[in-house]
Image (cartoon, rainbow, N blue to C red):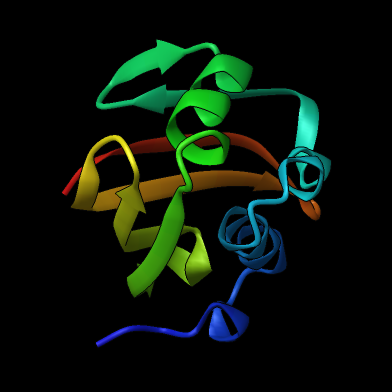
Length: 107
C-alpha cells in the first residue's frame, strides 16, 4: 500500500519526494542545505554526482510504502531506468525546513 506524497508528515521530506517525482533537480537542491551530504548503502557519496546518475538522468521515481520517525524515515519502492524497481530505505536529517543529510540503501 502506498502513501501519497502529499500525505507525508515532514514538509522538507515531502518537498524532496515531490521534486524527485517531478524530475525537478532545482527544487530538489532547494530543499537541501548548501553543505548537505548523503550516503548510499552505508558509503558517503558525492551528492551532486549521485543525484544526477541515480535520479535525474535516470528517470528516478519514489513510491512511498511507509514512513516513520515523524516522516523522516521512509520505505520506498525506488525506480529508475538503470536499476528498475527496488525496495529502499531513506533517512533524513532535517534542520528547520531544509535537509542537511540523507541516507539511502536497499531495504
